[in-house]
Amino acid sequence: MNSSKRLLLGTKNRGKVAELSEMLRGLNIEVISLADLASLADVEESGSTFAENARLKAVAYARHSQMPTLADDSGFEVEALGWRPGVLSARYGGATTSFDAKIEMILREIGASGIASRAARFSCAVAFAAPDGSLIAETEGVVRGVVAEEPRGVGGFGYDPIFVPDGFSISFAEMTSAEKGALSHRGRALLQIIPYLRTFFGNLT
Image (cartoon, rainbow, N blue to C red):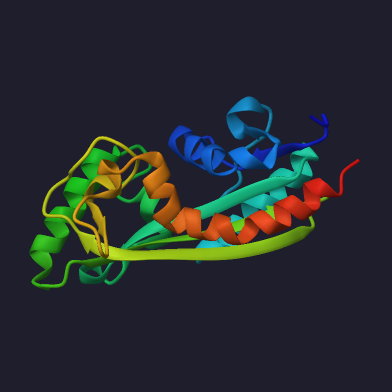
């Protein structure tokens, strides 16, 4: 493998790193994460949309690391909560609050909302930047479904245990990584950006 064919994932989230690495397995590139580069400072996700945050992270981490960088921002959105938590999904209820607690909070808030709809969606924006920080590509993916009555399954991460995608009777957390990857918001966004990765890394000598 060409030693220059390394791609930085702009995240330390182990679940997300595993999921992205699985999806990128066929590209013959070395995938590393922020956890492998402790010297890089975290980029503040100050954008008001998933796309803005993904772009901020991809550009900043690429410039700081001098490596091609793939970054995403994603979130869980619930109709009964006015499509919250959205871009605040990871920080909902406080940055140190566990996802088990966040899930309990959301289920309580849906019950207290008085709204019958349990419609929900996962949204994801992905950005790919060159080592100089120039933006190469941006994509977005959405998967729609409903909020389960209670958490189900032990796979995945985040809000996966309470999300049942349309057309299925099991939650994301009850699916294999391959099943979820083929269906998920992140998988849909990544599928659109893979051609740009192939072109970029294919042009390296």
